[in-house]
Image (tube, rainbow, N blue to C red; front, side, top):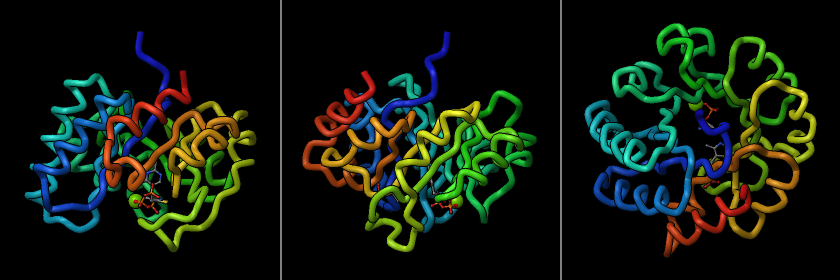
Length: 205
Ligand SMILES: Cc1ncc(COP(=O)(O)OP(=O)(O)O)c(N)n1
Ligand SMILES: Cc1ncsc1CCOP(=O)(O)O
Ligand SMILES: [Mg+2]
């Protein structure tokens, strides 16, 4: 019996320091992250493959779902559990054709419930809305209201919140109805990533 998709969803920061990335990711998984997304917009293919292999091994060690952002071919080559795609990435159906019917294909839906409806119709496994708060990683992101998560309850798939989420504001996102909260900075920049992960994961218990 597989666990329902949801809970604490960690996303990796862009870094060439693989040792630090893996050490911090291990700490976050130990704290209870259920899902990890490898997101790297700047490194070359060889480094992204090396980092992806290391992250996949950590997820298998901790029983966490491993997803790759944007790059369907890298997700396939690594044997990831799936991919997350946005408006400028591969289509949902194309991703599923490459990764298979059982793959997890998540879709960015920004601030639009209509995009989520379309994504579900195309076979998305979950839909993501954000940024729900100002994000230093993606300052240009459109702002998505928390009300979207109540609206999204009528969709057949889980919803994920992203953007500027931290221990200070996470509870309101969970109470708004997000099935998962995804974070980069509040986890990877924390003095004690395990403690922060534990605090955030506990919101879903
Ligand atoms: C869960 C989740 N939501 C949104 C994103 C954003 O992805 P990114 O590739 O940075 O931007 P878009 O392609 O969606 O515009 C994500 N990575 N994960
Ligand atoms: C990738 C992405 N998409 C919308 S906001 C964001 C960045 C999330 O990073 P943080 O959790 O540090 O705000
Ligand atoms: Mg993308």
